[in-house]
Image 1 (spheres, rainbow, N blue to C red):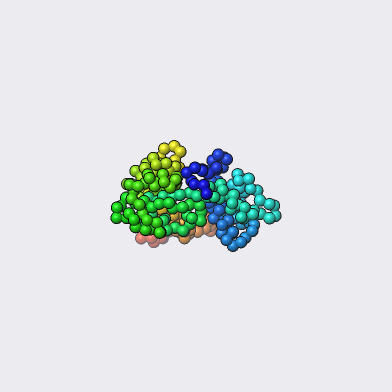
Image 2 (image 1 turned 90 degrees about the vertical axis):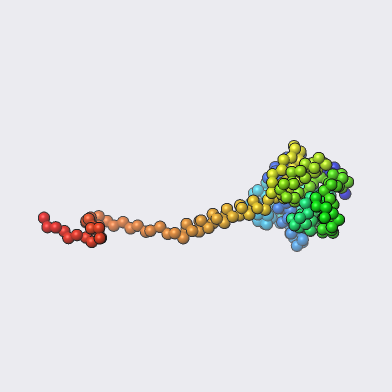
Length: 258
């Protein structure tokens, strides 16, 4: 099986837009669920609904793959799984290193979805000497001093950073210098990388803040909807009472005779 260091995905060279690339994993997840249920074909409308996009966008995305489906039948589920997996490079073996084995790093190491999606956790790395040799998800943690040698020995091109923010940039620079060209960053900081290195940032606090914004907006809309404006009725001129001045206490003074 080919390794990730020598084979790169062909999506960019084929001119597939980045927005389409970002949606391919959504389609693949939905298709995989259909495949596991032995569903042979799926319509664009059904698949779009499962992936959370509109069907016109889905058909446009699939046109970049050269897949147009069959009128009245839909798309072949297994073939689409293969097509998208190939475009994403998931038919290859991608060795991954996770740097920073705290709570988050350990959770990532224990995630069972890597292997089924074409990724192999090749090594777990941490700067704490007390962590060295301890097994996490059945893999012994190795000290950060060995990072460069691990990347070379395992042919790693994808690194996952789960360190504290203060250590992330230095770890990133060491990974890049060792030959890593794609980084998934969980550290709450922005990484500076040279051209040719791809970084994807996952910041849970930002995602929660965005959700908080939407919750606040929904609460404001609900509050605004609950306040009913007063109903103003207009009376005709014949129905209107003559205007009179009121005393400070609110009583209407008697009309003086002329």
